[in-house]
Length: 520
Image 1 (cartoon, rainbow, N blue to C red):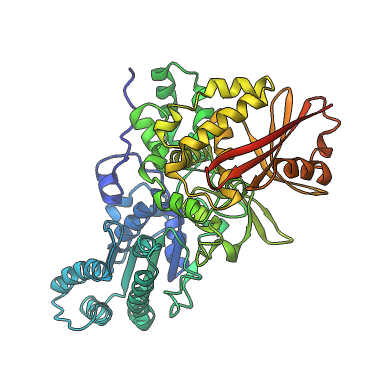
Image 2: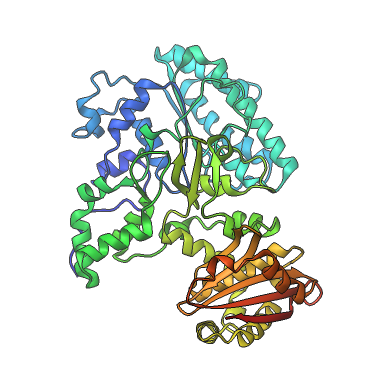
């Protein structure tokens, strides 16, 4: 095996440690310079494990005047002053916030340390202490203060499913962050990062001049890795990975792009690679789903399944900028949270309607997310038992619909202990996951002149048109397909058309009956 050409900082987010340890660093310092010279109050939203902490650490080193760390980097040719400022950096990520006391305790940990450093005998609430500390640091140093808050929203995300605690935490943070506006005369720069955007979270109501750069084309690439940067920093790494895995160099480039690329955080700009996955792939010398493994969306899976969101509506969803920033209605719209957490990304933008089209960024995200959903609807013991993939595929490919439906009934019946069906969408989601596990691409809730068909499944020889009913009549389901003309768009297609009207029972929690009709 060839030796790796670089040290990859897979478990490091300290800028100083990366530079001093001679780890590979993708130089973003020109964007850092643009940021600190053009904005005073700044907010950036990016998914977890996407480089926000490294960016925050870079800002910390810059404002502490540690010029030696930036020698040879882009900012070295731009900055001439290198002033030292008092820097208060909070990292709210490393805590499980199951009480408001945990929030206060985390902030108190930082305040107490800085109070000792500046000899500040502050009394009162954390907000009063923070305000006193900022003024004390300014008066003592003669320099305005820099405040960096990494993962500001972690306490809010941890309490999303506990509404009363969530409101209490939000009010606590609102009071704490209001200090930043009140201390404006002593402040040089404020930078906050998080997963969720602030617009409707309403904890920054006092910071009306807080600039959100999350959807700014100018800062699209401030976190993550562009294709140009991949060629500049990882060309030798790709050569080594290709040699060590027995693949061609082009195949490695193609696989990296398919698996890890595809993020967009603005209506224009370059594709962005997931940085943690890229670094792990080179460090481990194999391509795996690294980001998803470190950021498994347990709370997202719970929300999706609890409120019965239709899985087919995620890919291709359209939202405005305001809607993407609004996570206040998670029981009715989970798409903004899927975008903010990195499971969806921007795929297009319509200037006329000012709406973004969203989709899965890459195969790492799409396959891993669907696999997690499959794990909820169909536990592993079920998938390894009654779910014989080859037999299902054989039925579909050869038009043996009766056998397919019998197998499906058995599968659904075996999954009842993990599911709580009360809506048609629940069974539609189960069907969509089955089709995904079989490796087919199903189209659900397809619009036609007559209405919306529940699901279309296509193979090389067949077009299957499904309509589902809850505790209803299979005959009515078949009649609806015909009356609404769901098959009409496909009538000139030479493939065989099969109509399936199926009924799900909320009593037996599986398929109850079905009717199959072949269309000549």
